[in-house]
Image (cartoon, rainbow, N blue to C red):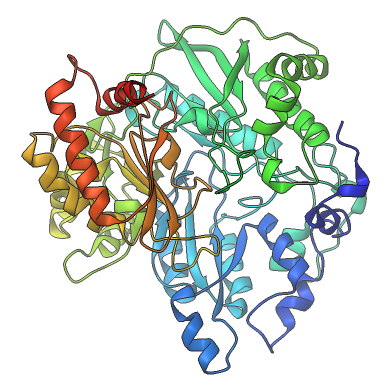
Amino acid sequence: MNNDKENLSPVERIKTSSNGLRGSLKESLADPITGAIREDDQTLIKFHGMYQQDDRDRREERVSKKLEWLYSYMIRLRLPGGFLTPEQWVGLNETAEDHSTGTIKVTTRQTIQLHGILKSHLRPTIQSFNLQHLDSIAACGDVNRNVTCTANPSESPLQQEAYELAGKISEMCLPKTKSYYDIWIDDELLVDRKAEEDPLYQDRYLPRKLKIGIAVPPNNDVDVFINDIALIAIIENNQIVGYNIAAGGGLGATHGNEATYARLASILGFVDTEEKVLKAVYEIITVQRDFGNRSDRKLSRLKYTIDKLGIDQYRKEVEKRTGFSFEPAREFKFEQRKDRYGWIQNHEGKWFYTVFVEHGRILNTAEYPLKSGLLKIAQTGKANFRFTCNQNLILADIDEKDKAQIEDILKEHGISEYTNGASALRKNSVACVALNTCSLALAEAQRYLPSLVTKIEPILEKYGLLEEDITIRMTGCPNGCGRSPNAEIGFVGTAYGKYNLHIGGDRLGMRLNTKFKENIGEEEILTTLDELFGMYVQQRLTEETFGDFSYRYLHTLN
């Protein structure tokens, strides 16, 4: 076990002395002098689903005026499986208008986050969510994060089973502390300290964040192998008979630190009951709690623990704690990793419409009133809202008699036209938030990738590739939030306007890409892609994807 208490990182000391993640948050919130909170509290607030940020576009201006940075906060909801009722969407829309920038952001983890919330608006925002039966508990921090699962309705009723499992895992992995309610909801809350004792997290919590995803083949729309714990449903005779369980995925790295790397999860084996799934997930987490690196946070994710112990030793430790052995992994097959845009009907006759939301940004512009259209749909009360791991939105569970009304609203606000008109490359693009709010960003991502795609599209058209389902992803730093290491074309920010270009990832999410060129700007990006697409058209094998071609091409260079 990792019991080196002399070399604990500062974050570890903050957690264990935090009085159940309370710290001095109440005092920080009450301080009217600054828009920031105390330094230690900036760590603790993450466990409550928030990050302190500032507007990096305005730093220079603020400093020149001798003003502190323009601090604000991002709040992320805990939505296992990514589901909201229409009433909750209406409430979310109102909360976004009252307390944030107004933009609703769909994340790559199937949830929603709001940006630009001032310190004085934090409690009102959380209390507003609470009235909608929503919370942000453990949406960030060194705990299990939002549990993702297959969103596409065509997998129903199996999708529903996976969704229910996501909820059970989320509930099982919640911290026991009531500090969230104590700080944000009810100042007078009487807390039973005995009830706050936490056998899973203890007072240390995890060495770093932990992510869990559930996939229902044949669609890997959750990018399941990028998770710390990956569950792949095994289907026989249209029934889920159990799950292959994998562990050790994670895409974050640090520029210049070769000890850090992206990694896909390794399969531990198969379990045949939900009870065993829950027990295995729980004990995978306890092994990480006890063996994970608590001195160097850059090396503290589960993937490093597994690589240090070895996959066989990690499996044995998990099996010792569960009291059962994993069975050999069962066969499964992924056939795609994308959202099915437009209308689709499930086995119950319900209709679903998948809206293309470029990089998850739901807002109104003069040309495209997306946010207003979605609000109008929610106000009908006739569609639920589901989110995908590709940052899109599914209008769900629509009765046949209500489909025409929803379709009219989609047309009225240009939503169906925008969804139908976007190129395949654009629909298969993902970008993290990056600038202007992420403190780790080295380069742009969501604000820049749309314009870069616009410049790539004519190149694709030149080669007859405009409708090719090529995945393209961009992150503003190497931490992997936009999942760029697991794309056919990945961009990783190195400095403002500069990116590492990665190629060779597969289309199904089963192989990471490889760095091809370093620190290049837009002109070289476009020239390089032009050359690669030209070679692809001339040299591709039958039905060979761009990712498989570029992987093969990379091997000819070595």
